[in-house]
Length: 227
Image 1 (cartoon, one colour):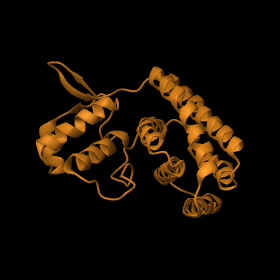
Image 2: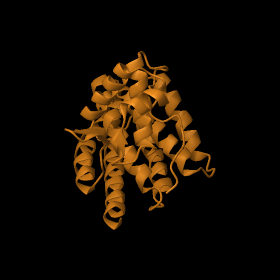
Image 3: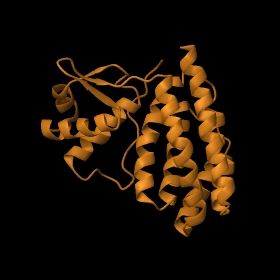
Image 4: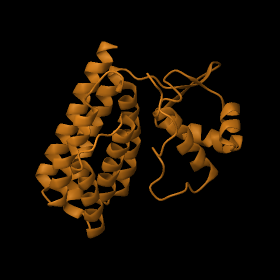
């Protein structure tokens, strides 16, 4: 599988990260989620310090946070490694997303401001354009759609929680790209979802988001079981 190169994935919505620890966190998280650091790869603080040109203390703070988010794991006397991905991870992840993502969609349909609706209209235009996109461009669009919905819920606790789980789900998508052709369909599923949010249809928005998460789980389960 060809690994993805540097991209805009996982950058903080508000612009530049506020501290060196934040910068290290987003940079390392991108390396992990885009599979430049693959599951099981060892992680060296020294190598990261040289690669990112950030001091060891911010790197350690970032790795501590990534360990809390289950993207990095530490083994005594062995070192630090990128966490693996298996079917059990997928099931547990989707158990949480199946509850929280529909709630975010419902709240977005209820609370969307005019600014939110303008952003959603722009995303709908992109989906309706019908042009062919690379897998990486589709992943980028998927990311922007989900994060727009999270922000439009206007619940920062929910937004932050879903950001964490989205990063885990995105890593699974990146692993699966070589083995599935479902990505384009999955991204296009967002069209009726965004339309429901724009129209303020709370129940439909929640139902469509739940179906979207379940489709993701079914597709990824097939991929992981076949590998």
